[in-house]
Each structure stands twice: as structure tokens, then as C-alpha cells.
Length: 419
Image (cartoon, rainbow, N blue to C red):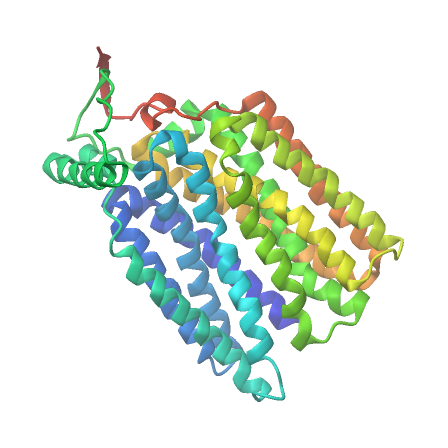
């Protein structure tokens, strides 16, 4: 038990440090280069985890896996927002972030096979599960080769011809798909200095001081969803084992439906973030998550749930909460200047993971053995944070729907706007 806790701690520590290190490099070296690098680090580390021969190597490989995952959030979210049209940026960002849960669902399904002691020895099955995850990642890395570099990043680094070529290729593809000419570009011109490359101190100062209200908003959204998901998600196998006597090799069967609910939520309601708007939808999803979780907690404490009905309740919660959690990354990736975008995502991801993510597994891991009434108060704490984040969105939220990224946050290198 202690070694499992330390392994989780190593993973979270790696995620924090990886986010900050790779986030800074993403703004300096480019989106594509880093989202390929971080995924490669993750794949290598996951494969090595399956080959670990003692606790020390397991701890190191999970730490290395965390660095890849942490850097991944900064690299891929900044690339998504800079490539997707403003009118569908919210929906697209949420759906792509939710594909994390597709991997979780496949992993849960695979665990039913690999952890079945009638098929594989226990000391071999878990290793095959990690190697299966590596195989899935190889498919993703092959697909990413076709994603172009961000034209916005290229322009801010003086590579105008490359940026123009990518834009022309995208426009040609869209014209062929819709079979008509595209509308003329906006008449506003934004001048930027291509030779301006801010240092780390200036980037952090821009994020935390010049945009302190936006920083406070993203911090609230990130910490609350990290505590919520790391607490509820990491404790669920323990809840199934302690309260419903679910065998370890059957846990995946109960984790599969909530993973699918996390995936389906953004797919089915993500478009409302572009039509109804960011503030109403972020507020609603955070608030509803904060209302539903205490209801499940009280039902669990009253012994009114079975393993199946508790899983159904969890599916309903995650269906809503998944969009809330993804909207935190959407917000971080679109309300800061292009030169600081990846670093902003990394900074708040690391703070959310370090504060909310690290505390929750330890707290919930201690509460579960103490009984359902004790666990209920942990769930109440997660719900309170989600409700506080909903209030933060009401007062500090940014109406970013259908606006270009430059309208939401002008580049640090911009000189002037003119018609």
C-alpha cells in the first residue's frame, strides 16, 4: 500500500516538473516539436514500466511517465487552439481533451483480459497491460505526424513563409470539403515584432501580474477539477473493494462505464460552449458537478447503493464533470498571449496537480478505510471546490466564444492595431 502511494506521488511529481519544463520549451521551440517529444517520452516510459524489475525502477518509470503527460497538456492544448477556427474552438478543444478517457476505457477493458488470473499469471498480466498502452500510443504518434506547426507560433518567430504555406494548405483543404470559396479575411491588421522573444521572467510576469484576474480564474478551475478527479477517480477502485467487495480482476468492468461517460460528455454537450457561451456552460458544469457529488456521497453513507448503482451515479457525475475539467484547459489555452500560452497551461496545470492532485489521493486513500461517513466529507470537500470554481467563473470568466485568440489576448509582441 505504501509503495502504491509513493508510486502515485512520483507520477504526480513528474507531471508537475514535466509541465513546467516542456511548457517553457513549447513556447520557445514550437508546438509540433514538443507534442511529438512529450508523447515519445510517455511511450518510452510506459513501456519501461512494463519491464520494471523492482520498486525503484517502477518509481522512476512512473515519474518519467508523469513528465511526458505533464508536458503533453501544454504542447497539445496550445496547438489545438492555434489551429482551430474560433467558431468551433471550444467544442474541438473539449472533445480532444476528452479522448484521454478513450484510452482509459480501452485500458479498463484490457485489464479484464490481462489481469484475469485464469489467462495470465499475475506477475505477467500487469506488464502486458502497460505494453498494451504503449501500442495504443504508437498509433497516436503516427497520426500526429500529419498535424502542422502552429502558424501563429511561426509568425511570432519570424517564419512568415512557412506560416503562409500552412495557412494556404489548410484553406485549400477546407475549400475542397465545402465546395465553395471561403469568406474574405477580417480587415483588422495586428502588427507584431518577429524579433521579439520574451524571457521566462517576462512571460511569468505577464501571466501572473498583468493578467492576475485571469490567473486567479484558471487557478480556481484547475485546482478544483484536479482535486475532484484525483480524489474521486483514484479512490474508486478502493471504494469498490472496501464497500462492495469487488475482486481486483473485476474492477475494470466497473471503471469502464464512467470512463465512457467522461468521453461522451464533451462530445454531446461541447458545442454549447461555442453557442450558449463559455461563462454559462463552465459555470453550469462546475456547479452541477458540485451538486451531484454530495448526493452520491450521502447515498453511499446511507448504504443505499450497490456496486452497480454507485457506478451509474458516478457515470452521471462524470458525464457533466468531464466538460468542466476540460474547460479548465480550454480557458488556460485561450486567455493568455501566444508567447506565454504553453507556459500558462503548464504553470496552472502544475499548480492544480501539485495542490489538488497530490492532496486528493492521499486524503481519499486515508478516508476510504475509515468508512463511508468519513469518505462522505472528502466528497463534500471536492464538491465545495467545484462550487467555488463556478462562482469564480461567474465573476472572473472571459467571454471567449467565437473570438480570435488575438481578440481575447493580444500578443506580447504586438505593436499596434489598425483598420
